[in-house]
Image (cartoon, rainbow, N blue to C red; front, side):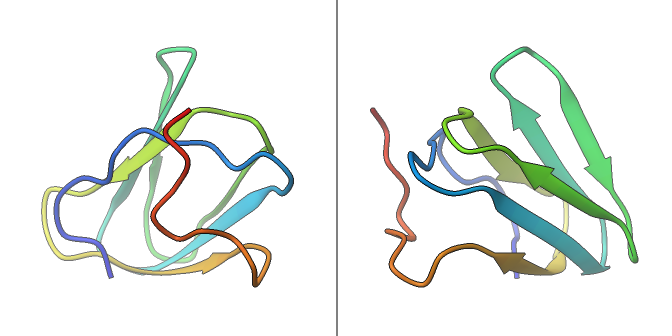
Length: 76
């Protein structure tokens, strides 16, 4: 669940996939692009891509990534 915004970060050694169940998820990417996902939509963020997730209201999603990823993100 996301409600608000997460900080900018990247994952060095794996892609990250989001699947939205409820609400609308925004993913801001390092190239100034913003992806908007609604229920049933999927988006993959390639490894080493700076990004942040955010929502304007409660959003339920499933995030797929490696089990050993630091869920707080890497700000470097």
